[in-house]
Length: 290
Image (cartoon, rainbow, N blue to C red):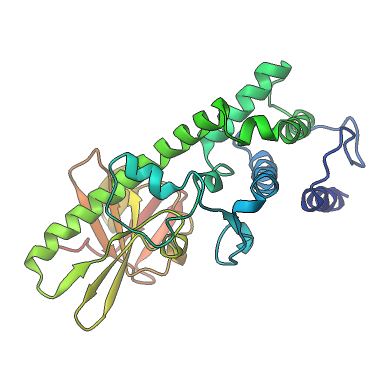
């Protein structure tokens, strides 16, 4: 029955059904949730995606290599490329520069928190159960123009999301600058411009590429550096959102933070590292010495 209800919700989303009457087989039943629970974040992501697709039809790119499940996304309005350029990050490869910051709204915790806060203030509800969640989803849909089209709310959401991306990009720039200095002593190799968020390389997990005159490539993925520890069997690194790091098509992992002087580079050697949890990885081999 629960699977049937999920299918009904998905069909509603696809059809962009917006009715005050909830299309549901269940009434009165509720489960506890919070802003970060899987059930809520999944519903929020799906709803935001379909709202944006509805509101920005004229700026929608259906390129199957982009967006959740290859469904595309918003382009040429509030672009990540322009927003980060305004914050002084101007060393990007322009490929993919048309991708909108709006495409990050469905997964950004600050955006989610802000929209839920608006709902709670306006309705006097607290997001702590699935009944409130469904009421919130309807409310967000009804208020889609006020929230997601140009105005003070959208301006605030863009600023919050840009700041989140900016902090992550500062970590990446720290890694990029580190390797740029390293290459001064390694003849024949150069770094291409960094991949702008939303570009094909970025979506594939490649933050930047090193090339030589023979067109050989080395691909790098940058993750935040929270802590680094030498242990008996190798090295333990704490980072962020690394549960799928082993699936990235890269040659090297770089751990860097704009707030720390150290940068650590590990070769992506299958079987020589273990992902312990969502934020911890353990390497058997030493970090690369330059």
